[in-house]
Length: 110
Image 1: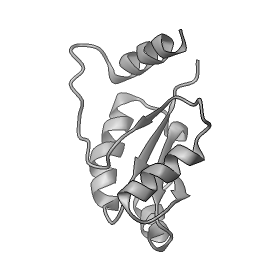
Image 2: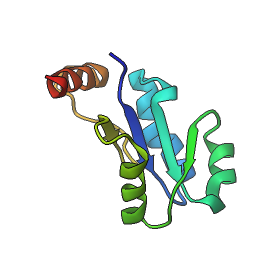
Image 3: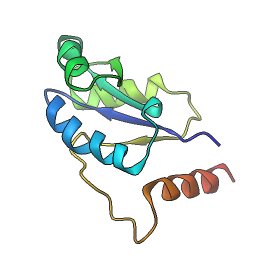
């Protein structure tokens, strides 16, 4: 089973994203090729410099519009994880974040 994509809308917070959410995902062992950051066109340069190697997608301005864009960009039946750009941890009650994601996906598929 392939892990779901992590979709992160972000605006004007490249450093915060790098230092919090991306650091958390890296520490968790989440594969970078499954992480997608949705930005607006005028910030693509800043994000590509601050978050090199990330999958950057040019979306729409405004959080509500960006979340709708993400929903439309994904396949209708695709399982994905939506995250904010300022996550520095998730309480997992003794399980790893990856174990929780895998378990959730297995349950959703049944």
